[in-house]
Image (cartoon, rainbow, N blue to C red; front, top):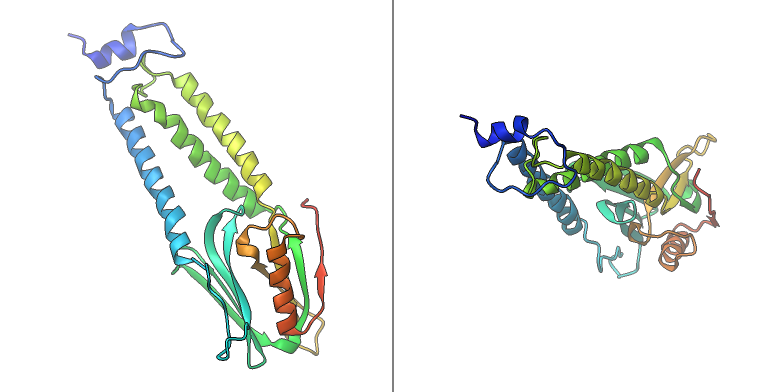
Length: 249
């Protein structure tokens, strides 16, 4: 005697783009697809909210003992909206300290210190497209497409049988993947502060630090908050600043 699974897979020969929903048949593929969607949703929520809590810089000001501002601190955001760390730079007793932290608050931290006199230039620049940013956009948009194309498994069986609109789901996946990837690549260039340092005064070799400004969300070098961060550091470091608007290549 044929089971409902047998009938779904083999007895119906006509492909239907939008088959009727079915809540009686629950093959492993359907259960697995919805499980993946739930896990992806939980992961997204954790990665969205935990860094925003860990790296919350609202009202945070870097001051000396006499409450004089001695630095800046800003959230680092991928694409200008996804919080994934913070950047801080401050001056104390003639030494400049740069702190860059990424991840969930415990995964990656880099701290460098150098004399104030070794700072060469401060520049506001738009972040360029580069391979890592494109890879992240490709990967994240792929996961987004997977999540979207599994949502119909709530009412379809997702087993490529009669009660599964696999063609429609596949179209959802690749369409979402392409649109989201393109959008994330376009959002990647944001304004950052470029701090150039010459560690050894007897050498022309320089080191460049790229730091978040304006809470990592500035899209233009004319952004008032970004300019304020730049001017704050200029006064602390006593160096001239350059404003450079580079079109991303």
